[in-house]
Amino acid sequence: MSRYSKVAIILHWLMAVMIIGNLAGGFLHDFVPREGGQRAFVMGLHASFGLTLIALTLVRLGWRLANPPPPLPAYFTPGERLLAKAAHWAFYAAMLALPLSGWLMAERNDRPLQYFFAMDVPKAGIGKPLAETFNEVHELLGWAMLALLVLHIIGIIKHKLMDRDNLLPRMGIGRA
Image 1 (tube, one colour):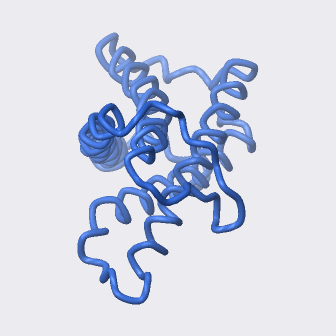
Image 2 (image 1 turned 135 degrees about the horizontal axis):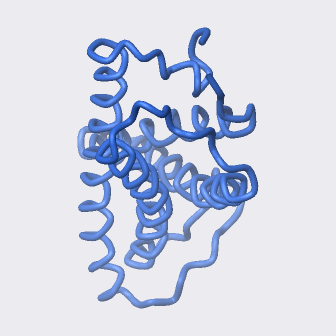
């Protein structure tokens, strides 16, 4: 069984942890107290990891284009092939659109957008009314990313428990 390259595997798992963490931070931020700057700290990390994900997604896309993934197993049906490819490209779209919408919605705040509390990141200059629209877009994209993640996990479970086709080693988990 062919595997993804080590670079693709590292990018996959690094980004998976960051995306899950950012989804948690985004969905749960209302439960973080404002007092003492706790929410500002959480959202500062959320924004910083989001900006990092933009860069990592571009690196990952470039890597994927230069280093095609291993072929899908021959026994996949045409429907499974289509679903697998559509899901992967939907993830790439969401991995770019979600943090980009967050960067665009940052315009609605008067405070600076900072990268890991160390440097200011220029805002897009789109104005507050349009930034408010991107706030809604960002929330919808967050739900879409969560749905993609759930479908991805369901697919993993299906392949592991129902098909017993041992696809996990392709992404660095276990032995083929």
